[in-house]
Length: 77
Image (cartoon, rainbow, N blue to C red; front, side, top):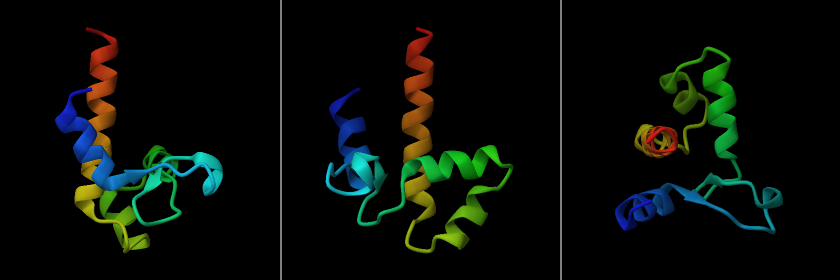
């Protein structure tokens, strides 16, 4: 992970061992990133996700997905 990737991810995700059992959450919320994954796996859209969770921006979601995509691609390099 590059320093730029880490900086961007740190802007949208936080981990606090004393909250949500240390699960990565969208910054400033108690909403686990896993909720986004589950939501998308269930066939819902990004727009539906941000409508349901208005404290999360579309840009936050895209940053998380970009990070996940980069990590998946790096596994196969």
